[in-house]
Length: 294
Image (cartoon, rainbow, N blue to C red; front, side):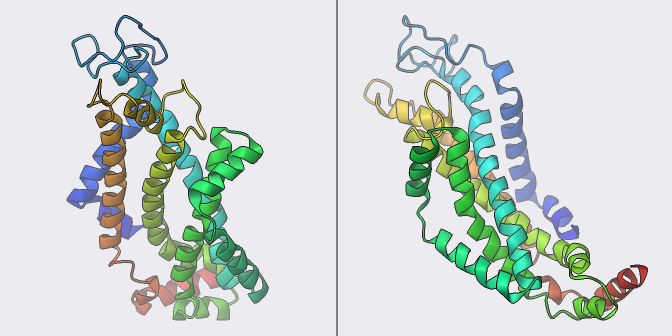
């Protein structure tokens, strides 16, 4: 956690958090502050340019673009967060368990993750949507399942270097259970790496969600999403060439902020250096005292 606090103090991280904070605000109150109903169609102002009445103009059926951008923030971000949350659950816990809970589970989990890594994101999401129905949760389930191997590999790589650490061996010799060692000593060392991966995966998931909604998968029109707005605007470039700029900028800025935050955390943690490099005179007494208290 100390590395995370150090990362927040870096200037790129502050800027990234400011941008992400604005996105969270838009996600929370976008519907409320939208000047118009995002679904209202004004047939007298179709493909209108920016004006005092419609700051970003209107789309091909006369809906206010600014209102749709604000209202679409929630679906776009929540969908990406849902996929990342599922990937975390399916990847981090098995990744830790594969290192500390036996060779059988390790072999089985590695084979499952190898199989998932062979599946392409978009095609698998389309197949799941065709099988379970074209809905947001179905599409995000597919994306989350395919994000799991990333979290699994990163978590396993970070934890496997701690298996032979002296403070872990000391805790084992003093009678600490595997679960207590993982929860007390290993997890706090793996956490910064998981946070970096989460920020990067969130950026990737947002791009995948935008791609899926661009193709009409997950969220169906007229519900506003950033990717869906891109798809509708691209059909009217000759009449409204600046149409895709606003949703594309929102996607680019949000993804860039997530990647900048991940880079700042990585810099603060010493470029992902394993936690076993920590001074032993700090770690061994903690492990021994925790085992004795148990």
